[in-house]
Each structure stands twice: as structure tokens, then as C-alpha cells.
Image (cartoon, rainbow, N blue to C red; front, side, top):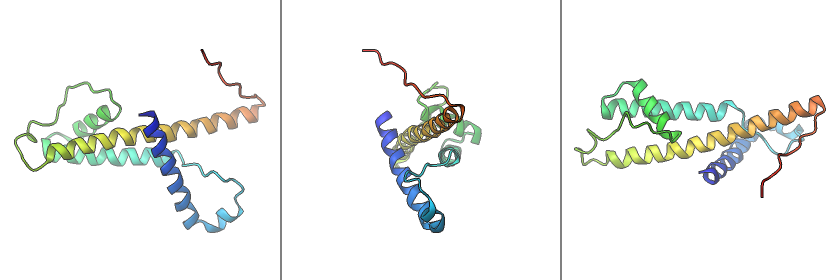
Length: 146
């Protein structure tokens, strides 16, 4: 999952960079920074919107409340998986492909969560580096165990 999260984070960063350049050409012209960071709120917003879509999806398909749908989606995306809510009681009886759509939604949600966590981690690392630089502390990497 780490490799998938990093790959998706790289793709989102590249598209965010292009998006920012299209809408802020003047600002981009004077920017000396080559690497454009994805702001902290972008991955959080993506994850929240996807969770809200899951709330609606499971409320309609399973008859759950919106809170239960969001809870199930978040627990599944973060791979905690308590097992207290299980979709499928109504999807198995239907031959309309709901089970496949549910599995695809959950798989993409896990990938999206890995990507969002990677983007958030990158942002926190940049903030930490900036704080260390302002304090005059040189960042020393942790020793690796061989």
C-alpha cells in the first residue's frame, strides 16, 4: 500500500501543480519553487467527500444511517475493519452488480486513503523541516538498523 500511496500522491501533486499554473499564471511566473506542494486541506477534502459519498451509497443500498455508512467506510479505508457492520445482506440478493460496485468503491477508498496519508505526511515533514530551520536545528536522520 505504501508504494501505491506514494505513486498516487505523485500523480495528484503533478495534477495540482498543473491546476495551480492554469489559474495562477502570474503567481507561477514569479515563483522560484519548482516543486509545488499540495496544501493540507486538499487530501482532507478528498477523503471527506469520498466518505460522504460512501455514507450516501450505504444509506441507500443497505438501509444504514449516514453515520453508520461513514463509519463503515472510514474503518474499511484505514484497514482497521472491526466487522461490526458488514454490507451484503441486501446486495447478495440483487444481481445488479452492487457487490462488485461496493468492492470497487472500498478498494479505491483504501488507495485514496493511502494517498491522502502520504500527502499529509509530506506536508507535515515540510512543516517540521521549516521549524527546524527557523530554530537553527540541523535535521539529523535516524540511524538505520542493519
